[in-house]
Length: 120
Image 1 (spheres, one colour):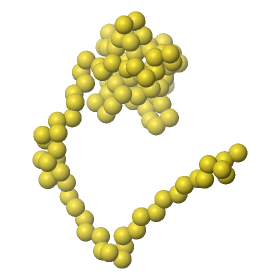
Image 2 (image 1 turned 180 degrees about the horizontal axis):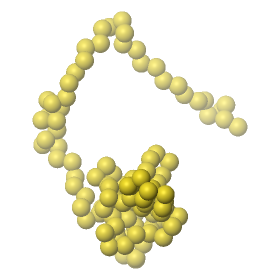
Image 3 (image 1 turned 90 degrees about the vertical axis):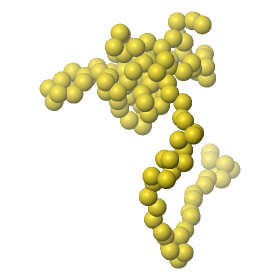
Image 4 (image 1 turned 45 degrees about the horizontal axis):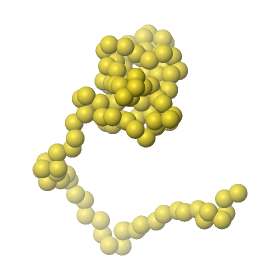
């Protein structure tokens, strides 16, 4: 395994400014960029941010990162602190969920699609 396939602890080292990376939080594994936002220190937030098109994480929310390697983009080892979902707990989680009854006349499913022939 080459160096681009090893997770690096954020407590040990951080990426370089603007570096494309994979990063891991308890929410999942993401591909994005690292940025140092010095103005965040003034409002008591971590200046170390991990950003992608879907959101931003602070360094305290990210445990590990690794450099993005386009040649190996589909080969990502699991980070050391990855915890698989315990399906034995699934029923307990579902039992805790609240349900809301929706009357039949209010139930509706709608979706939008694009015909590939319409895309130019």
